[in-house]
Image: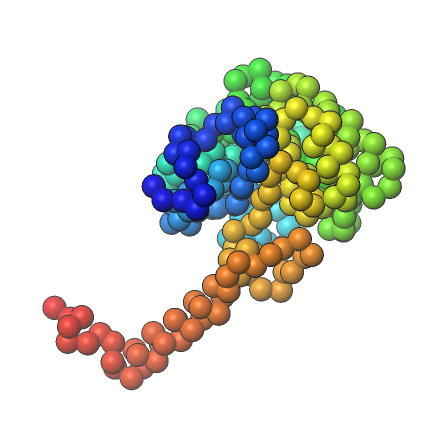
Length: 273
């Protein structure tokens, strides 16, 4: 396996995430939703892969993450797991699969774990869903929390703006983070919150924090792979750094293919049987 700056080729586990925080080693995460992409991401040396319900936007073209189902998330997670050798694979529990009650949440969690083979699950929310998280943890399933901007609650917020800029919401976020860490969540995603608050949370909890739009003070970072590779267009939040322009590269390559087919230069004699 090759990887940039990666010498530890052990399978990444939730325990390894804790080790990395304790050593001050930053944790790198990206999303993936399919076998081919996940294999490339894993080979490049990523520490963790999130099979995000952002597949609703990236893969299915929906405006929000809400339409994703347990079966769809299981499908994507199973596809990713077939490709990954090293990275920790976390699957999002989709909207409606755990908000009803503890029993429904545990049933959904067990189904995703059994059918996909993923390493852990991620749930959005704090004290409101704490009983459900406890039930999933009690079943032996690792849980990653998610606070700040929680896209499954977009209809409640009404905006994708930065969260916890007011003291009351900031205090609740810190309280929720401490609670999630205390009951045993192995990591917490902090999305679109002020950098100073994210640093405060990171210093207040034992488990690692993974930021997205939360500044450099978190224990790790995550981005949507299609965004950072430049496949998506028209989505340019402040926190997004594009590391490539695959949209332009792919458009150019496909355009050349179309021209070659139209001009009958593909396939050539050497490419024919």
